[in-house]
Length: 106
Image (cartoon, rainbow, N blue to C red; front, side, top):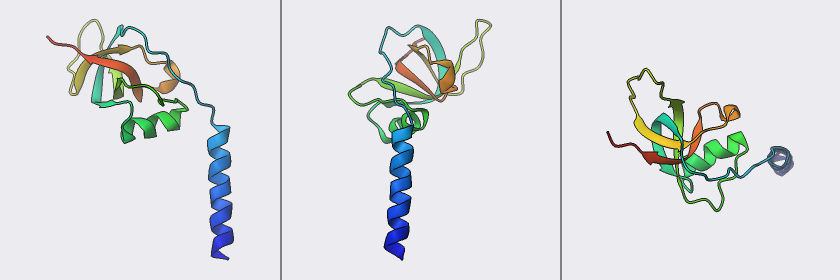
């Protein structure tokens, strides 16, 4: 009985993973100033988890990514995280991740 339940759950998770489309983001010159809660390597577990939830494939990329990012406005705002310049995150990523983030030194 337990093995049948385990098999059903595993099958359902595999079906869900296959149903989520993945895209590999292009890595271009960073142009968007962002305030991110943290910066991690694209190969790290936190980056992989967020990317998987958004359908982003980071496999093969070796760039810093920002997690929980918001754009820095022209008027300025206090950044409680890390100030970086990144590839402009796509709207559907909802500020959860930004690609190729480089620190801004003031």
